[in-house]
Image 1 (cartoon, rainbow, N blue to C red):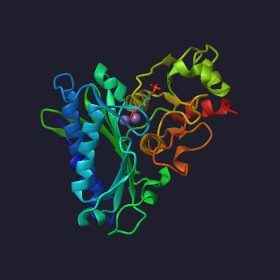
Image 2: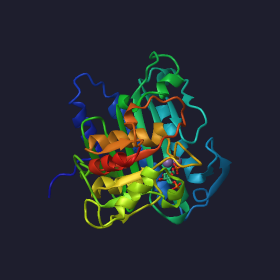
Image 3: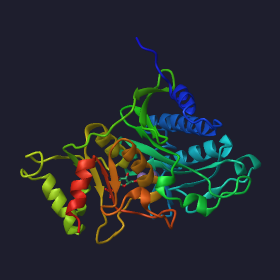
Image 4: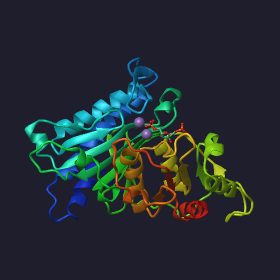
Length: 333
Ligand code: AHG
Ligand code: MN
Ligand code: MN
């Protein structure tokens, strides 16, 4: 039997790749791992404990009804970042504005984190996979001061690290710090994330497509043409692809990472920018996709090149296996 590598061991070993590393990013990644274990524990109790399942009774800045677990997870991650000491401020889906931490230790933190604490929250009450997505940047403001909006509004290509946690049939943490992508599965019996998917690569092509096809009639013609291509016998595989749509971006993305496929959330007549948020959904997954050999675009522009203007900015997303995203882009005008 070979020795298990835990996430903490892996992070420590990787730190040696960066000669000037001070260990702060390693500690931050460990803080995220601890917070996600706590959220995972809460998710696993969702049907049993009243304060976890159901609606919170509030609506977030994007007009979506908050679920109790959205708020539980948001608080858990914020606490981890506020008391960890490496982070000077955060932005999350559940907070209208970014939060600048005010303690002296936090003001000396070098990093900011942008995150979606609970992705796929409409799936919580029906026992379907959900996730967390995070994105880490170096601050651009001066160390020792409070975080600013400028720290939050950086292009995706500036990300230092990004990852997601999938609360699926098992809990997995997948992350990149710009040198490939590695996946860890939580072994609940020892409470550790263990390296289970080293050096993940997204297949160059696949036969799975994921889109909310309820929107197909309000999408641009190029998207309709691509979906027709997926369903045709005249496509590159000579047979229709399979449609798979979970409705949790993390879960749909993770499946495509492993099996090969494309995920599309295009603009529609009613929402020209689509639904997904650039800073804490599209950018982190785009970084991971590219690190795994895949692609992520709006259909016209590389996600990681977009200059953000607002915290909760939305963009269309085409993400997944390289050849499939390229084909979809070739049909857009
Ligand atoms: P969130 O739960 O964080 O608001 O994100 C939901 C997102 C994403 O996970 C999913 O792919 C998409 O919204 C589903 O949207 P539709 O219901 O419009 O398909
Ligand atoms: Mn989300
Ligand atoms: Mn969310």
